[in-house]
Image 1 (tube, one colour):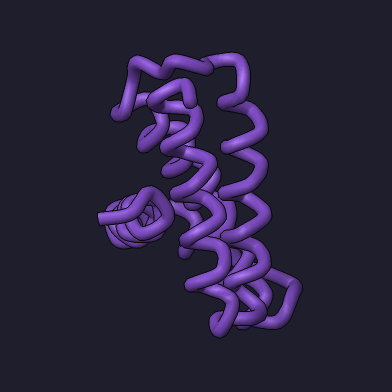
Image 2 (cartoon, rainbow, N blue to C red):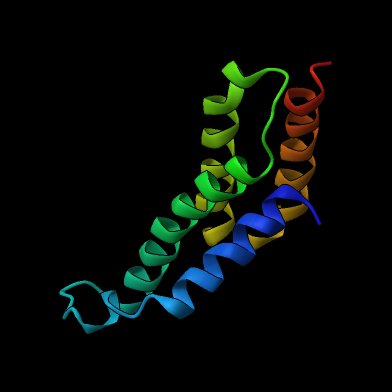
Length: 101
């Protein structure tokens, strides 16, 4: 399983278990609300998944990897056809940070 898939799966799991946000009445269109809600949960999932894969050889580059995954999530939310591009880009960077090559 790739890192991006792990983040998306964990974000989906968080969305199922956290129903507090559903009770809030919103003033924005419902599609925007659910997309923004998923992105918020994805940011929590990024932190969780990156902590799960410790230790890293190049730990100083973790903020870059985190922002790369966050950009991918936001981009995939509007353009799902870009998934394979982002997946390969993130896996390449993740392997570089993890192994220190």
